[in-house]
Image (cartoon, rainbow, N blue to C red; front, side, top):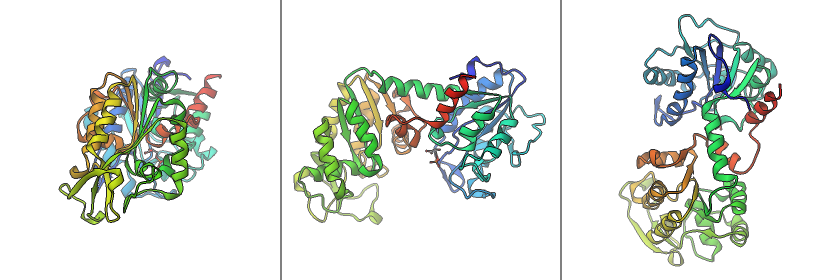
Length: 389
Ligand code: 3PG
């Protein structure tokens, strides 16, 4: 693909698609990881003398109308603070607008436009007309073929990859294509069903596949254990067995359980640690037991490459967080090339302040998983296509 760093941006109108889809709570940004990751690209474009237009989606609003709760206004304010300059939010931009004195503006949520998700050509052409150079830098949205990711790249005078997208592709490529071995993949989260293709793909390339969270529970059940009230998927037990035959799968052999119902969960919920073979019908697994966590930490210590997506327990509550904490710290302390991705994973890294100790923290959730599955990312594919121009 063409790279932003190879383009002459001086005096050019540069439209940068970023993934500024940050989590909001009551209008407040709860994680600015994606904003921070976008800053170097913006600064480079500004330093090169570009007139910079930033665009992104936020949430999943209904198309065709403005929805205050999905407005990028909080993001514009945060960008302004971090860049030390005003970043005006442009509400009506599809048919062209005047940047005035500003050298960087943020265009309001692309998903307010009819046709964004359907990758409508008319809309994509209008976006393309806004710029001289289109920069795709939204790795987190690269798995979506939408007007602001794919269509605009098709029609823009020049379409190239931004530095963030390029480094994401580099880091993931390093972990997956010809990795330093042993390669240990850790896949946590609630459901086998939502990560089956990832587990499948990783079972073929990882030396050890570690599963955590609700996914581990299904494996615990597949080994013939009672899992009580735990989150698990009975219908996926055959898949769990198949994966265990295909590769070395590590799952919980001791667990932390609670009898508290979901509504009663708290930082000091009462828990018990026991062997996976001793879970009672009225108990729910909410974390790895300490033995399993220590075993996984040892596996991580001996790894040369670690790929991590998804927590090993309900780490949001301190009472259920030890497993995820042990594993996160083991990854941070390891000498291995480590790549982590996914919303919950980033929240765990944040909780223990470990971002600086992980070799690469990806801004992708769904895109990260699809890349790991070996799927083509449409917004990258179109850049490859355009590179042949
Ligand atoms: C994400 O958060 O995974 C990306 O921003 C994509 O968002 P979407 O799933 O709403 O397309």
